[in-house]
Length: 407
Image 1 (cartoon, one colour):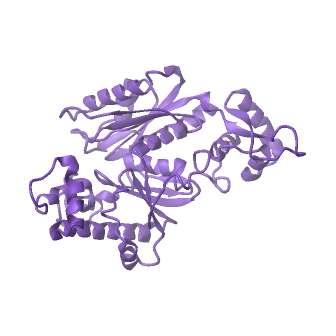
Image 2 (cartoon, one colour):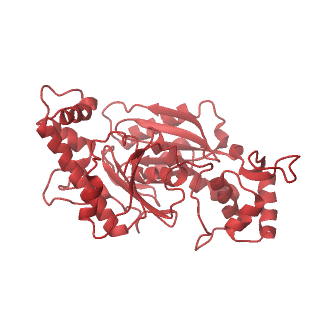
Image 3 (tube, helix red, strand yellow):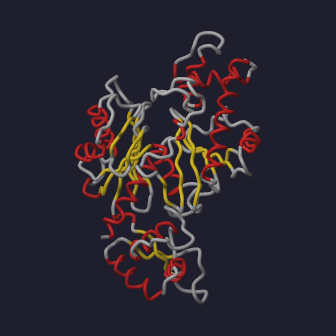
């Protein structure tokens, strides 16, 4: 387990890199389009081989997609000409200008957004601080609309095909209903239809850990993995699971709430209102809550508490060190449980705060192994920039928009 450059393993294209066709295949037209997008650039021959179909089946559909300006022919400068001279061979690529989608991440700390084209390339980004104490759905709709307007101020709005939105809490991804969220003071809200009406766009919403998992599946370490788990620790503790190159959300769309699994009966109070949840010991707010009894001197501003707690722990403050040690043990327990329950090929600790290593000590792999039934999977850390959540939400929008675009 180590802190690696997240760009080091990124290959051209975006979307899952499937090694074989799906068990329940999509229409061949969609398989062609998604395979070209995932590859970034691919020849017709290689495309037919990857899809395990005849070139004669591929050619007419490719011609149709080119005619509809959804695919384009691209010269491959890295390939030698057929006879050592003349034009390089022609490959296929997605036409980026075929449409755009919006991705938003809404949170207590502020909101981020991106616009990406059909090839998954960001064309705009923006941030919006959360203002005031109003935690009503109406206020959240206002902020989402303001951020979206800021994102598309220089873009032809008719090119926008839809929006994907991630936020913390219990979200029914299929229906777009928000059962509970720490950033809202109401429960059981049909949030996706409200956002769609306000933005004037088709909207898909999901738990923010699931959109982070989409970022790993479409742009990051999980593109070529058929199965993997993503765990993130920030304001809360989130988890996403991919099975067969597809995010798994449970029967009701509410699965993978690792942060609210119980690790201590009648334990510390969680922000969900229950006691003993994992995130009540590991999440940022839990560490900040404990910091008041550990730090020497007056408490710094809230945004600087974790940094000061870490600094004092490294300097030998035993109380500060104990807070991180306990959080690390609970995290190891959670990862061991993930390994035991799902046996993923890899666990990715992902997010924009993974550069802060106070939870990820060298002893972590050994502790996970000691708590696991068998040999645990590799655990990797992927530290992204702060827009990763919005990019994952954009991937959700691309996933939903593609079948409609293809007809």
